[in-house]
Image 1 (tube, rainbow, N blue to C red):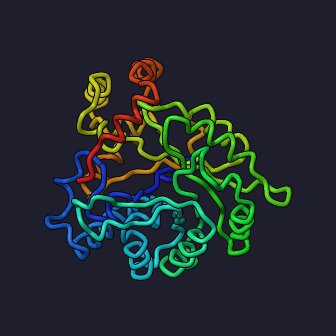
Image 2 (image 1 turned 120 degrees about the horizontal axis):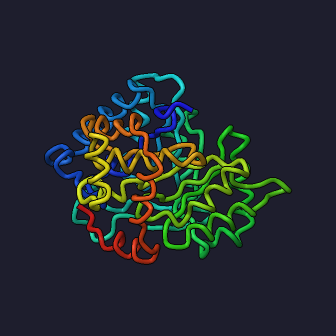
Length: 312
């Protein structure tokens, strides 16, 4: 598959004024007003569409991201764009960068029904995939049969059901979720998980998911920006070797996984997007991959460090 067609745009850092991405502050518009962030979102979407990217990922908790995306879709009438969104978290940051709480999680039937209607009102028929946001083994969804049945009914709207994962036990969650069935049919057909050269613990489970017919999306492939602005020496060495930025090396590593169907880019400006896009021209050899493999850290350490990142 063409590398560009395997890329998607993630709107986590564009639909709200604050997020945990490192290195985005200088690329975001001054003041981060609603209007300015809408314009920034449209600019990134325009740049991505012009290069052939046709997947956009968002969520109810990404502030106004669904609203911005819906407006862009209505104004541009683009062809072939597939949209994945997520439910389960609600944005409560009130458009403040210093909010004490930015989002609240709830995996309940009531939350699903309310947020699905909100998503459909903003995205309409463009919605292709609706995902449970940050599913973990502790989620009540695994015991909530009415919720599982309600999710299964999305197929009648032509929407695929998926889930995203976070935390050091992503692999366990993926394997458990793959086993969920409703009326003898597998509930989930997509999975979106964190994978990057620092945190690859879910790789085997994601490969299994792909082999079992699930569409696999990779998120946080730049480790929330850390691999772009604070790259380990090994990444910097390969960036120099291939004459690209460290972000392109990290993205090329993600694209090098044959089981990864869609790799999400979280760029917040056209310039950042174009820098990321250089990954499609990078071919990492076996020696490169071995050097990157040495950078992997224990999952518990990675997620502890991620949890310490500030919303800015």
